[in-house]
Length: 456
Image 1: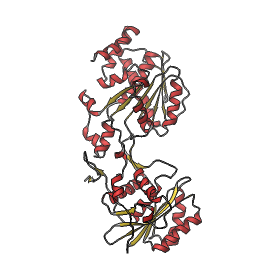
Image 2 (image 1 turned 60 degrees about the horizontal axis):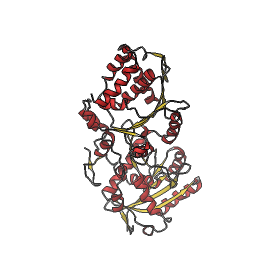
Image 3 (image 1 turned 135 degrees about the vertical axis):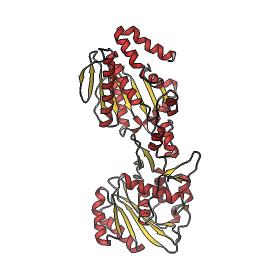
Image 4 (image 1 turned 60 degrees about the vertical axis):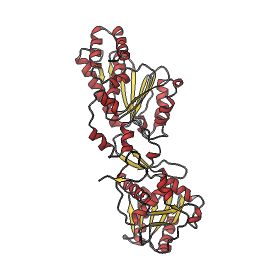
C-alpha cells in the first residue's frame, strides 16, 4: 500500500473507536489501489476521467457510506436515470452490510428505503436521477456526468448544494468534446482551479490486478478502435466522433451536378416545431452514382405547402420512390401522400434508433465509397437557396455516433438554429429510396483515414 494512502487511512485511526477503525480498515482492503486513491481523495473538488468496467460505481457508493457513516455527512449521488441511481443505492446498502458484519455499529443503517440510506451519526446517502429535485446541503457526486442529458442544470444544482462547505466529486467515461464534462476536465488541469484530477484508463486497472474481460470490452466498443479508446482509454474523441468524415464529404462535393439521364428518388424530412422540413431529390445514373438534383428546405411548412412541394417533385422528376419521415406529426402527411401517389411510390420511415442507424450507415457508405455527388457551391445546383450547399455539408459533418452509458450506439446531431441535421437525414432518406442496401458497422484501424474495413 502506498505511503500516501496509508497516511490517509491512519487519520481515521485517531478519529474512530478501535472497533470501528478495525472494521473500516478491513473494508478498505477490499478495494484496488486505483479505487482507494479515489475513495480517500481529501480535496473538496475532484474529477475522475475513467474507463468503463473498472468498478468505479462500486467505489462511488462506498464513498457515500464512508462519508455518511463515519463523517456524519449528507451525500447526494446524481446518476443518469432512475435505474442507475437505484443501483448505486443498492451497492451502498451492501457496503453498509459488509461493514456491519466486520463489527461496525456506525455503519448499521437507521433508515433504509428506495431513495435514502441513513446512519446513527446523522449522515445520509440520497441517490437521485439527474431529473430529480435537489434542495439539500452537503456533498454531491455526479456519476457519468458526460452522459447526463441535462448536465448544465445538474451542474447548477450541484454547485448550489456544495457552496456551504460540501465536497463535489465528478466521475465519467468521456463522451466526446464540447460538453460540460469535457470542459470541466480541461479546466481542472489548471492548478489554480482548485480541482484535483484522477485518470484511470483500463490498462492501469489491469496492472493493479483488477479482473477485466477484454472480449466483453471489445464487444461493448462494437469492435471499433475509436470507440474502445473513448470507453476504456480515457480519450475524448473530437473529429473522430464525427461519423461521416469531412474529407469524404469534400471528395463528393463537385462544381457541376449535371446528370444526363437516370431515375429519380426523393427523401422528405418533416420538421417538428423549430426543425426544418427538407426535400431532397437524387438522380441515380447508369453507374449507380447518385447526383443531387434538388434541395428544398423551409421552416414551419403547413400541410398545403408541404403537399404542393411533394406534388412538384413527382411532376418535375417523375419520382420512382419517395421516403418520408413519418415520425410524430409526419405520420398524417405520409399517409396522405401514399393515398395520392401510391403506396409503392411513397414509403413512410419511422425514425427509431435502428432506422437512424441504417440511414447513417447508408450515408457513410455513399460518401466513403464516393457513390454520391453533392454541390460544392450554390452555383452547382440552380434554384437552391443561398448558403444551402455549405449547410448541407455542415449537417452531414454534424452527425455524431454517440456511445450511451450502456455501451449502445445512437446517431444524432446537435440542435442548432439551422435545425437538427435535417438536410443530412433528408439525403439519407433519398438514398434509402434509391434502394441501396443499409450500410454496415465499420471498424477503423489505428491510424486509418476514412477508408473503412467492414466488420464481418
